[in-house]
Image 1 (spheres, rainbow, N blue to C red):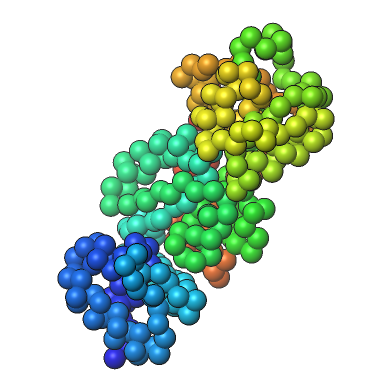
Image 2: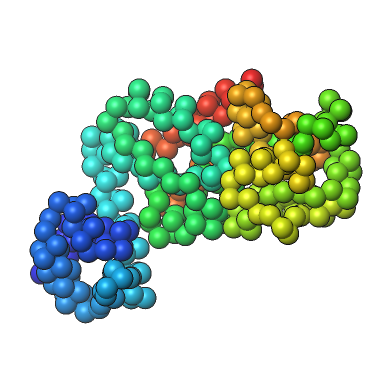
Length: 301
């Protein structure tokens, strides 16, 4: 018996859920049947793919490579079917990873447009840190990601847009009286609020803080942009926010004063990133155009 595509789907489902029972329910098969099929595959391959116990099914070191390759084979099979049908990614499913500092603010309009123009397309979105996005792309858990290209060397990147950075501060702060963009030196001796170190934005903010002669707060690390904005509103420090978030926040009315940060390094490039295969995935150019268009629409208001 040789592993079939269905067997590969079993392996990936167990790896994703961490539970044979959950994987069986997801795949609409019985748990005993799935366990039996998994045992047969392990015997055929001569390796134990999962360490099974009361806490679930954990991928073994040998199984990690099998899972990675299984994801890649299933990905290529899906791509082949889409190519034959002529619809590219829009005739199937796309697992898209995105930075949490972008996804909730950029993707609603993108998803609405894609569902209107391509009703058979299924987009599965995961908001994850830069590190997790990199892992997801490497292992095949994610098909594409929206992230900062410098954090994913070796991958195929399509430039989307550049975000400038903004400063959010309490409304009663002295600097809130200024209406012009703030030079970096205006933030000397100030406390900078940012996300945890797993996010690229935190490294950018640390660099800005060092150049300004300020300090990054060691008392609070935000889990989201909303969290650090709320802390800034209390006067706990200055939150450094990307322009798409700042634009959405300003449009709906905000509890902080927002000012553009005037500094050549106060920016970040955003790209659509996919594995470095010989050719980009069919339809990825269309997806990139939709993402660019939505970002431009947000930033111009």
